[in-house]
Image 1 (cartoon, rainbow, N blue to C red):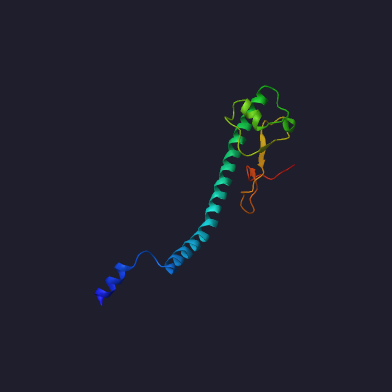
Image 2 (cartoon, rainbow, N blue to C red):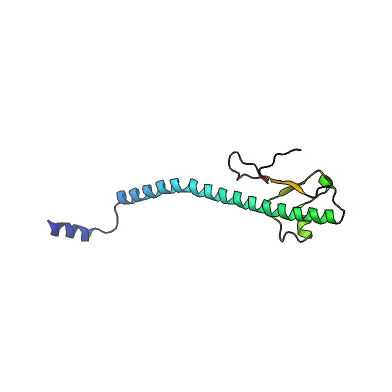
Length: 139
């Protein structure tokens, strides 16, 4: 009996159609379970990158506002600060991949940035595309 089985196994070449279909079905199921997780991780990573960029722009804008105030050129919310302004002032080294909106405080006596906003399709539910996130919009 063992010799018959060994003889059959030696004569068999390759896989049967059923075996191939089962393997392909298992692979499809695994891929179907994996793709949503990978997409979710990519979305979270993009959101974190946007937040880090906003923090960098916020810091550079704060520095720029202080420089303007020191030079007696600060006029509060009427002061227009863009990412290109920060690059020209050599406070940012390159243009961010996200378009950030810099909102200065309204006071002419306080050289500060109120918050940074941007448009994002990566934000988690309930999150706001805003830095710093814990402030409320008084405008």
